[in-house]
Image (cartoon, rainbow, N blue to C red; front, side, top):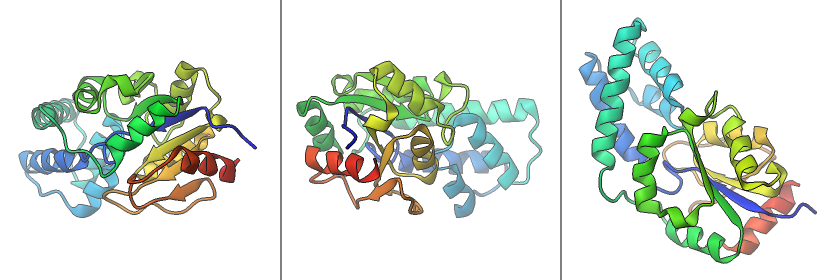
Length: 222
């Protein structure tokens, strides 16, 4: 039976209800580019890293990915998201209690987000840095989710084997990254459905999550 050593948390849509803020920003960006953001493109963006997000936006809107235009769009998006994330950000249901539970149980904990560091710091202002032993952001690895590098780096910083971790995610992109790294995955969908997998356990919310639940998830998938 594989022991549980650490919990690795996604941020947007998992701990914080910040996908709604990103939704505002990407739809404003689409209009800035002379188009309307479709739900199909928006859903494809959920969980994506910065460079992938720009590619998805420009391809989805049928725009030529001119280097200067892409950079202008990136700056617009980051500036707008920073504005929207200034001040407290709404929590996802049960997330605050779940963080406290993991800390009280003596488990290691890391924030693992595709959001770049400068924006993730706004999230940490709301979440509380005391809940995390480490954090890894999308601009701190060569490839963001769905590549497993970000989860492998988080486990390395905590000094644990990914096989001894439960990752908590809300998106297909994040769940894929975590399972490729060797983690058991607890999926709490937010904006879009996440397909089932032998390495994924599903809950509707984090409300009532216990240490025993996390150990059972790790043991079921070991």
